[in-house]
Amino acid sequence: MTAIEEKLPFLKPGFFSWTGTTPNSAPEYHQISKLSNVIFLIGAILVFITCLLLWIFKRQIYARYQNNKLSPLTKNILIRTAGLFTIFFICVRSGLLLSSNFQRMWEAIPFHYCRLMCLVIGFLLLFNRLEYIKYFGFFSIIGGIVALSLPDLKYIYTITKGDLKQMGVENFIQVDPNNHREFFMVYGQKVWIGDNFFKVNFNNLFFWDFYLIHAFVILSPIVIMILFPMQYRLRTSVISFVIIFTTFLFMYCLNWILDITAPIQWQSNYFYAGLDTVNKIYSKKLGVLTKHPWHFFTYIFFGALFLAISNIFYLYQDNVLFEFSKGKMKVKIIKGENLKYFKEHLS
Image 1: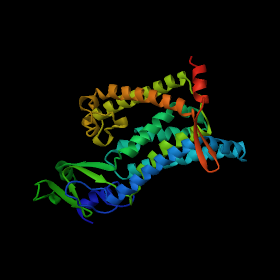
Image 2: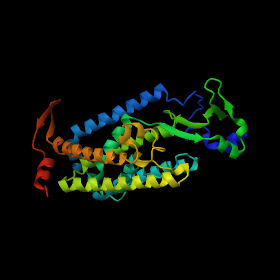
Image 3: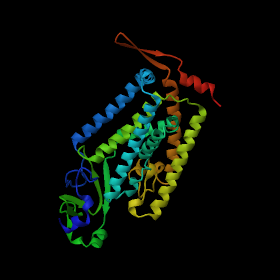
Image 4: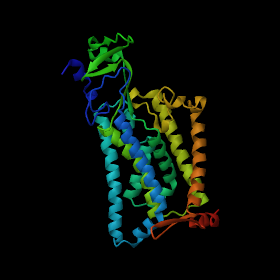
């Protein structure tokens, strides 16, 4: 082991490493393999197909669940166990990040959008308060859909010459003859002075962590809402917006405070609402609309718009009935219970 490897053990590749499973010395950044892209795409498509099938067969699934012979106590235990496992795996991931000197250490605290949704679902399961999914379910689903549609499988690592000098290993710095950028070799990997982008493949834990967490925040609310139908009314929508607005405001302020006062590892980007210096990629998506502080209003606007659209979809999708007879499927339009209940309780 070289002196620089002794100083930077967390850059060692492996299944549990955010730098990737195998050494990679790509000239600019570590590339995700074509096979990994295909595997992720297939996985995402399977999730979306599962959503469609759950919707088509939701009445049959609900009836089967109601008619099963499991006792209420057994159901209660299974639900709470599912919540316990969910929270356990969230804690395991946080432990891995904290123990690996992950540069974006703030991600170890599960306040990032989909991580927080997963944590909330875990506690709803653990305490068997599934009726509250109506306040979070729609936001959880859209977050997962966006993540699977636009996967972010890279981990940024930044190091300076000053960092290496402080470690006493600045003599390992080399200059690339092609682009004249400074770098050093560690564990067979080329690491640039400045920003590095490590991308994980299908043979890495963090690849599957990303996929499974977002599949979970899509499918689990749908399953819960099928097995435990919620009574949705206008007040529910208002409460849902107030909760998500308050949560976003808290994360926005927390980001602002940490991005100004905390060390680089704890300069957070929860809900992608950090300062532009931290939210480097997403702050450029829509020009000034996604730059600090204007992205606060942009996100709130799109959040309210999505909530309205999802409410309309939820109320009217119940009017579609799929009937199965002699191996054939018929689609009928009926007066669903969701819309009827909503109209009866507009206050």
